[in-house]
Image 1 (cartoon, rainbow over the protein chains, first blue to last red):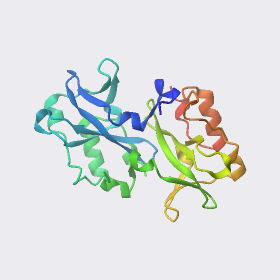
Image 2 (image 1 turned 90 degrees about the horizontal axis):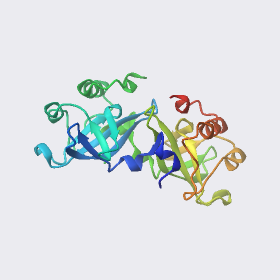
Image 3 (image 1 turned 45 degrees about the horizontal axis):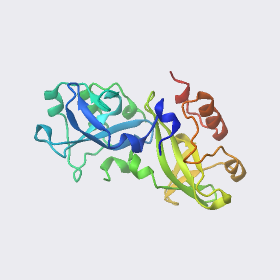
Image 4 (image 1 turned 180 degrees about the vertical axis):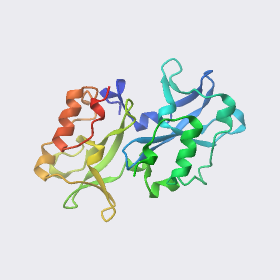
Length: 124
Length: 124
């Protein structure tokens, strides 16, 4: 379904999933495999990036704080503007061995790593 | 994918979609067909309810403000606690004729109708 509002400020989670993710150079990193919602605040917590074959990390999952993803109309996908080496060393996980996303310290670590200003995980 | 955090405060949008929705009496109204995200605030704006066959409105879509949905472990689905008559007269639409969700007055009308306290649509 493509709703009228999508062209402006609303977007379907289904549409975000599958969208390509690029680095600042425009290199294809992979795609969004999942959207994680924080039930307490009602905020989108993470867009989970599934890596492609780059950097020898194919299939690895990265929980990206929603606010660090910027949609780029030229690329037709999201851009994560952090240095390649920093992204390469970011916390990642496998689908069959996910982190405990309920752990506030895990959430803080991820947000600090990417320089996200989101604070939903600090709310009770 | 069922992530560890889901048992606590995080949930996958994929898991929300398809989940049943009940009224306060426990009557099955339908299921969530789509999650709409507000790109400006990063908040979940709506869970779109696709009606079942009840009330002669099968297949109709209702944009429910996220904060009016309460998960009920006994029913194993979301409960929308508003009177049946009020729900029956709520604004609805067809998939092939969606409303302009970018229109602030449409958003305000929906939020007022359900008594939602969400204010994302007022943020610039």
